[in-house]
Image (cartoon, rainbow over all chains, first blue to last red; front, side, top):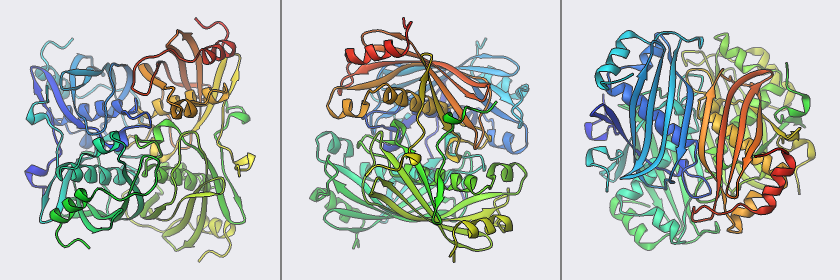
Amino acid sequence: MAAPTELLPASGFFESGEHLFPVRVYYEDTDLSGVVYHANFLRYMERARSDMLRVAGIDQRAALEEGLGNYAVVEVDIRYRAPARLDDALTVRSHVTAVSPARCVIAQSVQRGETLLTQGSVTVAFVDPAGRPRRQPAQWVERFRSLAPGIA
Amino acid sequence: MAAPTELLPASGFFESGEHLFPVRVYYEDTDLSGVVYHANFLRYMERARSDMLRVAGIDQRAALEEGLGNYAVVEVDIRYRAPARLDDALTVRSHVTAVSPARCVIAQSVQRGETLLTQGSVTVAFVDPAGRPRRQPAQWVERFRSLAPGIA
Amino acid sequence: MAAPTELLPASGFFESGEHLFPVRVYYEDTDLSGVVYHANFLRYMERARSDMLRVAGIDQRAALEEGLGNYAVVEVDIRYRAPARLDDALTVRSHVTAVSPARCVIAQSVQRGETLLTQGSVTVAFVDPAGRPRRQPAQWVERFRSLAPGIA
Amino acid sequence: MAAPTELLPASGFFESGEHLFPVRVYYEDTDLSGVVYHANFLRYMERARSDMLRVAGIDQRAALEEGLGNYAVVEVDIRYRAPARLDDALTVRSHVTAVSPARCVIAQSVQRGETLLTQGSVTVAFVDPAGRPRRQPAQWVERFRSLAPGIA
């Protein structure tokens, strides 16, 4: 039996080709300096990319279980502008900026209200179960193009 | 400016004295055995306890910043019944079962639909900024008693 | 080419049937309360159990890759006595206290010098790649018995 | 009482102005794709930077506790070349490439034997307890310059 609707984990949505996703800051995310540990912003950004796939109708778990493959992160460039704190409600904004046969580039930022906290770019490559690069499913590429018109 | 309502992180609610909280499983939560890493269920349970405080109107960040103190986990007993997998939508159920001047005992379980995944008990103690035990705010105790009638 | 000897990650050793393993506390381990986040002690304890297998000559990665199976945690009972802080050098003590055909019970504690920080018991069950319980390799059981004489 | 010498966590050392630091891959570091989760390489790199400070005689915990301040990560650029797997013994190489009054740039790579796994650059800024940029202690800058001659 599915969970009652009102109990589902928060999901994001697309707005003008951009995916928006909400994140709450918990104890586990912070470090003794009192703010979110820098590497944990990469976890927030990965959650948003996973949600983006889900919202786009792409089932990455099925792709993994069927031996099709998965996305591996090959490049991250990130700037930290302002810290996030316990209980903050954040928004991760993701925008697919380029798609090639085997790769996607996603521009991502994390905001608290109107305040920009981090800004970056993530490149992912599709790989088979042995970790070798392979073409991403053509259907997925079409999805990205339809959701984010103007992709390079 | 606050995030638009529809973008807020999922929050839980109380139902018959029990707090229900939704969690989604992401890549970061799993390990190479293909399922959620055991220690990460403790993170899910902590998120649910933090949400329980928020829903109860208790601001733990303010308590920390004002130098009042925070809850420290002093005991965890947990049984793992079934694994959780990528993309699973889980529910954490939390029930305050005992409150003493300085401690709370919370019974917590994690379910996927009707399937019980983990079941446990967590004891937290209120401590001052130096880590010394102190009485939890009387107002908080009243809150717990009003939300979960029948507490020991 | 292997790393130079002096650069190898720290490994533990057995002493009178008990396994000792060193851990350093880093930023990632702490939370905003200034001490190690409770769930991270379970990570320290898992590292120690992995090292115990390695020192005992058991290759858990090979067992996973050959489709033999892996240990899944089925029960954890842990008491937190004192906090750990950034830069602390800790020792995890592990002692196999019971072995049945499919399970092991390991008593584990974490200390800083002579100070006991946490104390607990972890039960692991051997499972096949589909997560179903199966007998652990007989050779492994013999190893445990030879390393910790007096096991139940 | 201190831990016996042979039980200390592994520490790194400087060699020709470069800091080398060993890391072991554990269950907690991997995800269901079978290899180390991308964000966890940032944790390895942070451990190496913390060890680098320790080896250089800089006590970052004391600096935090005395209210002097701490380093905050302001920029990370990282390329992932090859995956790391359970039980791998890795080496993190760190080299301070630029020091300004308030910032350091550190070039870091992670290798397994001779194989390059990740390569990147991390910029850290010294901040006071309120998170405001401040000059890093002059003594620390001298240390960096003496350990890595030729710093910009």
